Amino acid sequence: MRYSIGVDIGATKILAGIVRQDGYVVERLRRSTPATDGELVVAAVVDVVKHLLESSRKQALPIDGIGVGTAGQIDFVRGRVLSGTPNIRNWENIELGAKLGSQFGVPVWVDNDVNVHLLAEVTLGAAQASENVVMLAFGTGVGGAVLVDGRILHGAWGGAAELGHTTVNFRGPMCNCGSRGCLELYGSGTGIAARMSERLTASGRSVSEVSSHEVFAKAVEGDSLARATIDEMVEAISFACVSLIHTFNPGMVILGGGVVANRRWVVDDVSTRVRKLGMKSLVQSVAFETPTFGPEAGLVGAALQVFINEQATGGNLS
Amino acid sequence: MRYSIGVDIGATKILAGIVRQDGYVVERLRRSTPATDGELVVAAVVDVVKHLLESSRKQALPIDGIGVGTAGQIDFVRGRVLSGTPNIRNWENIELGAKLGSQFGVPVWVDNDVNVHLLAEVTLGAAQASENVVMLAFGTGVGGAVLVDGRILHGAWGGAAELGHTTVNFRGPMCNCGSRGCLELYGSGTGIAARMSERLTASGRSVSEVSSHEVFAKAVEGDSLARATIDEMVEAISFACVSLIHTFNPGMVILGGGVVANRRWVVDDVSTRVRKLGMKSLVQSVAFETPTFGPEAGLVGAALQVFINEQATGGNLS
Image (cartoon, rainbow over all chains, first blue to last red):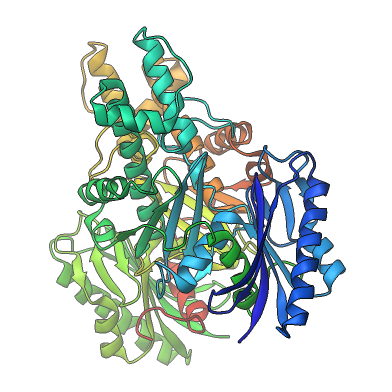
C-alpha cells in the first residue's frame, strides 16, 4: 500500500492526515486556520505536515508526496495560490507548492478544493468509472469542478470550472466577480438570503438579517416570498445544469454543498426539471447524484492527487 | 507527404476534396446536397469519395483515410449522425462512419462541423500552439467547439460544446432546444431577426419579414430598435464569453460565422466588454480572434481528423 499526506485548508480550519491509496485515513490532525495572515497559514501547514511525516516514519509508512486542496483560484501549473477566500487575509500569490516542496523534498500538488473533492468522488465515491462529470458545490458560494475524459479540467493555468460564476441571467443582479446574474447569486446560501431580502424590501416588509436556512424554513411554512426565492433557486440551478450538460455532455452531474446537503429533494427537483428542458439526446441519460464523501472529502481528495497526478502531464512541481 | 479525403456536408452543398497534411487542397469536388432524404446524402457522399479515390490513384497519392464534418449532433464514438440539420430530411440516426468504412476499407472519422473547423484553426490557423480554445460560430444558429489540453472536447459520446444552447437569461424567450434564453436566441441571424420583430411588434410598427442583415443596416442608420437589438446581441455574446472563460480558462476565444464575418467591430466590442466583466485573472489574458479559414474550413478540418485522431484514444471506427 502507498501513502500520502493530504491537507485541506479551509477558512476556519486546516484538516490534514496520512491517507492510504484506498482512501483510508490512517491519522488525522486538525488546526484552526490562522486567518490573520496567509504566511501564518503556510507556517501552520508546514508544522502540521512535519508532525505527520514524523508520525509516518515511526509507523514505517512510506510517504509518496503531499497533496493540498484549498478554496480560491489556484495556479495549478505552478502550485501557487493566486487568490483565496477573503476570510484569510493575504491568502494570495503564495508559492505554496514550491515552499512545501523545498521544505520536505517530496512531490507536492496544490489544487482547488472542489477539484480535489471531485477527484475523491471519481476515484472512490459517487462517480467511479465515470469519465465525464460535472460537479457543483452550493455553500456560501458556488464552486464547480469538471472531469473531461477522465481528467480534471484545469484550463490554461488552473482557473477553469468557476461554474458559480457563469451567467444564468445577464439582466440579473451584479456579482462580486464583476459579471452579472451568476449562478452563485441564486444558488448559494448568501445568494438565497440576498434574493429573499430583495423580495422583503420590495414588498415593504421589514428586513432583518435573513439566512438561507430561514428561507428554506419559511418556504416550508408556506411564506410566498420564501417559496418564490427557493423556486427561483431551483430554476436557476436547473438552467445552469442544462447549460453545463449541453457544454460537457457528461454522464453524471453531482450536486453537493451545505445548501443541498440533507435536502435531497433539491437534487430530485433539479433532475426532474432538467429532463424537461434542453436537448433530449443530452439531458435524458445524465445521472444526478449527491457526493459520497462528507467533511473529509477535501482531505482525502487532496491526498489522492499524489497517486493520480504523478503520471499525468503537467501539474505542480513537475 | 500524407493525404486524406475531407468531406463537408452542409444543408445546401457537399464539398469534398483530396487534402494534403499541410492543409493544401489538391483537388476539390462540389455537389448540391440532395436534401430530400438522408440516404440520398449518404449515396452522394459515397459517389464523391469514389471519384476522389480514383483520382488519387491516378495521381499516385496514397490516401490515409476519410474525414467527414457535418452539422448537427454526432455520436463521435460510433461515427453516427444522431440528428442533423432540419434542412436535410431524415438526416438522423445514420451510421455514416460504418457505411463509408465498410465501403472503402480505410479509417473514417465523422465529427461536428464546428469541431472540425476548430481543428483546422488549431492545426494550421488562428489557434496554432494554443492548448485551450473556445470557438463560437454565429450563423443561422450558434455553434460551438472547445479545445481542452490540446484535444477537441467531445464529452461522453460527442454531444459536447452545444454552446449556442447555453442559457444567458433563464427568464428569456423559449428556445427550440427545449430550454430558455439560449445564446442562439440573441446571437444568431435568426435570433437577431426574431428579437427585432418582437421590438417592432411591441412598438406598434408594422412587421414585415426582417433579416439580421437589415437589422445591422438599420442600426447604422440610427434606428433605435435596431440599435437596441444589436446592443443586446453584443451584450449576450459578451456575457456568454465571460461564462465560457470562467468555465474553460482558455488562452483564446475565436468568434466566427456569417453574423460576425466582415464585422470585426463585433469581436472588438465583445473583447472590450469581456475585459470589464468577470474575474480579472481569467478574462484579462484571453486573446480574441477571428477564424483564419473561410469557406473551406469544414473541408480541410474534416480531412485533418485523419492525421490527428489516429493516435488519439477513442474516436470513430477504432
